[in-house]
Amino acid sequence: MTIQWFGQACFKITSKSINGDVVLITDPYSNKYGLKKPKLLADIITISHDHEDHNDYQAIKTSANVVNPFIVKGPGEYEFMGIFIYGIPSYHDNERGAQRGQNTIYVISAEGITITHLGDIGERELTAAQLEYVEDSDILLIPVGGKYTVDGKEAAKLVSQIEPRIVIPMHYKIPGLNLDLDTADKFIKEIGNKKEELDKLKISKKDLPQEETKLIILKP
Image 1 (tube, rainbow, N blue to C red):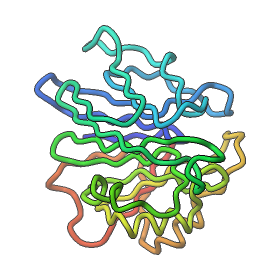
Image 2: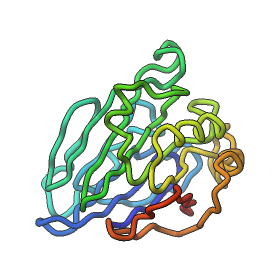
Image 3: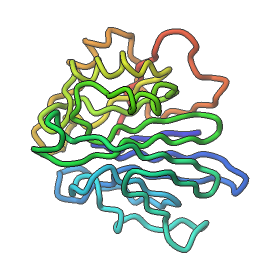
Image 4: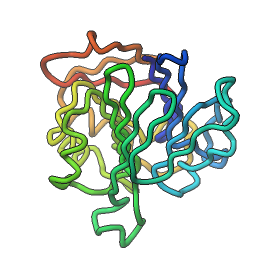
């Protein structure tokens, strides 16, 4: 499996199945946020919530495997091309959605690896019901930039709740982004783990760390 990050909450997850390579894109953003928009092909696209920096799925081209990408836009159970996805309801703020509405957490299973994408979660603590679905996460993709989501300190507490094998921060200030977000520095300090910086993460189930959570910073 390979995981690449393109800024905000947009990842490209490439996994192998009986159908060959399957590409899943999370939360594609529109071109109004200052980032160079990648040209991406997808078999599957997940949308955590309906904001323009997360929902521009119409701009993603179809891969050679499918007529149209399979679009996932909310809670429920999904299966496509050997990839299993579970959408869990959550909130974009810590006031039960009163400020920014709903958000969907996605638990993605492929190649025996479980990836949890928290979207733009604003809840500072997961409920027992949410934890049932995410506590066995191998890889956690978590927003850390604050303002619109949890900040670095709050994100670190969520990591402590979930206890993933690998954590990858997202949705924070990077060069070119014109949204007012914090950098990942506070989160990195709060986590306290030695970070590893990569252009992309190539991982298999047997390579997952077995002891403490590994912090990986992906370069956009």
